[in-house]
Image (cartoon, one colour):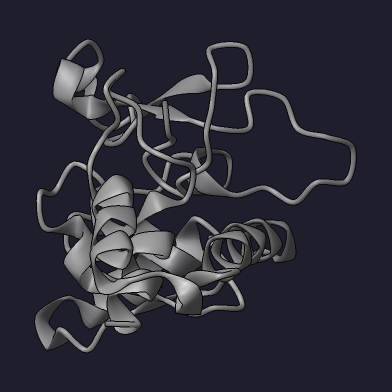
Length: 165
């Protein structure tokens, strides 16, 4: 399973349930399934900076947050080969995307390095692939596998691969 915010692979041992809209201000959504997300950082490593739900804490602003539950969520973010996540130029959501990245601290060094390493691993030998092989590789990152699982950082990898076509 992947976290809804940074795209890391998580297990039940290292994840926790996050309320998208905080319990403190949205009492009626405490047990609402569509308000619950799996997030990383159940327990942090010593000196590890907060990110994702741990950083978000009680923050929620409907106008300034891109929800990972939004079917069009990926349209508002872009990635660089060095692992950064940035907002796209979709003007009506640019401010919300920038705020989401900032409030969840999605560009901490650790996450950028993990995304960069994942992207670099996929791009190794990419030039030698046939067009058909490249298309199949892209498809593999755009949809879940036979077990319903997505690859870690699949959104970032798919974004970068699409830019190579």
